[in-house]
Length: 99
Image (cartoon, rainbow, N blue to C red; front, side, top):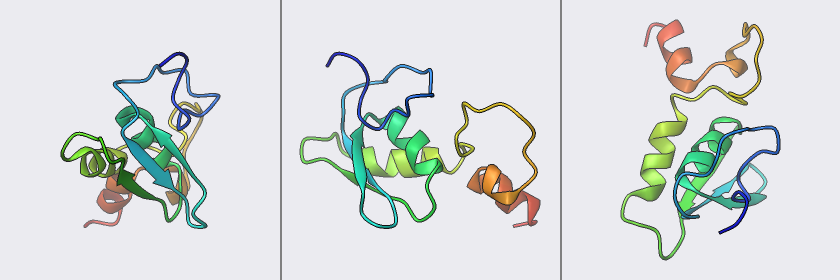
C-alpha cells in the first residue's frame, strides 16, 4: 500500500500501522476502510460509529479497534483545551461521571 489508508483523516499526521483490515461506518452508514490504528482514531471521532472486520482480517481486528477507540479522544490530533464531553474519550467521560 502506498500512502495512507482511507480511514486516515487528512489532518492526522500519523502513519498507518499494518494493513487495511476494518471498515468503520458512521451513523448513516458512510464508511471507510482502514488499518487498526486509523480505524480506532476514526471510530473515536464518530458519534454512533461501528467497526467491522474485513473478510481477510486477522482474528479480533474489529474488537481491538473498538477497544482502542474508547481511550482515544475525538480528533486527537487537534490541540487545544477540551471542556465538553464530546471532546473527551469514552473512558475519560466514564471516569468523569464516576463510573
